[in-house]
Each structure stands twice: as C-alpha cells, then as structure tokens.
Length: 193
Image: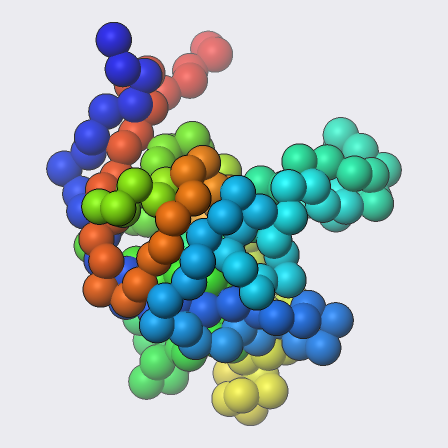
C-alpha cells in the first residue's frame, strides 16, 4: 500500500529563482527554467547534499556541524505572499527579495502542508517538503532595503506564511507554468496525549 497519497490539490509554478551567492545577498534571481539535480537547483548557493548546521537545529547539533541538506529549496505560496504584502501595506512582495526558489499557487494554507509531502511535476521531478520555513530578520532587512519602512514588520507579518523548505527526491527540470501534484503522507496526525 502506498505511503503517500495524492491530495486534491495541484499547484502551478508562478515563479522560479536561484540565489547564486548567499555571501553577497539573500536575494534570488528570476529564472524561466531551472535544472533540478539531487544537489538542488543548478546555480543555487543553497544546493548540495550536505550543509553546515545553523541556529535552527542547535538543540541537536553545535552550529557548523555537517548535516544532510534538507533546505536546498525555499518554496512559498503566491496566496500567502499576497496576504503578507497586504499586512505590510505593499502592493506585492517580490519573491526575489525573500530569496525564494519557487512560488506556487493553488494549495491553501501551504506553509502548513505536512512534512514529508511531495510536490511532483508531470515530468517526474519531485521535491520533498521538509518543514515550515520560519521568517527571519535577514529577510526583513532585504524587504526593508527594497521597500523602506516595510521590512521592520516582515517577520511578524510572515508568521505561518513563510512557506517551506524542501529537498530533491527525483531530478529533472522545472519551468514557470508547470503543475505540481501534491502527495501527502497516509498517516494520522500525531497526537501523543
């Protein structure tokens, strides 16, 4: 019996990008097509099978410890981006300001899709959702740089709407307009009480 079942949702890719040099800037550069390898998006600074641990996992590892890279890709929802922009009193939030890899449209409450869900393209490229990507001050500073007076509120406005991180399960290519089928784990929600 399959452990992942197709959900009733299909997302459309509305934007793709890569951040070529994280030391220079968090900002990503728009692309019409990206090649997807097991390392992540080609040309993306976050690519690689391994990464140095960061403050997000200090309960498990000292910062800088080599760990599996489950943060190869940053995926955000077009609908949630619009909500955050509205809260910030902006017409729109440019995905490039946020260091986005992929913007999808069509999955409600996208940031809370269950971990281990898959987004699979028609050509077979498949991304595994790791977990919610929490908003941070670094992203707020990029918003502030692009839209002075609005970045200070970004972290609070984006709570629960910052999208997810993901890693590549099957290589291929993705392009703007592609559709991604959502598969979710076939298991009940964890309730230890």
